[in-house]
Length: 139
Image (tube, rainbow, N blue to C red):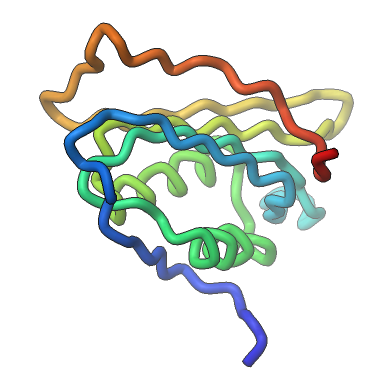
């Protein structure tokens, strides 16, 4: 059966709940439609989160992200909607989504939205270090 866009985010139990650890994902093929022009907007999404009890299943994340390709959405609104949906599904200790939209009208737009679990503060040893962007292939 072919895969289809789907708003359902599936999760699985965090195998190491006793430890804070950083999950980093780069999603280079995000697409939605400009609500003003109807033209496609393209972005690379950078997802960083510290799971609590659940982690996101990758295929469901791919299909969820794919589900926006025919939706009209302003950059700010769609970035925050994705954060809200991920926060609801995962209930992570911490989550940050950086949406780096490709140039439109000579302007690059980057939107950063965060969610922090109530009462969670990172331990001093937690370092949310920077990952350099990856090419689409590794060699």
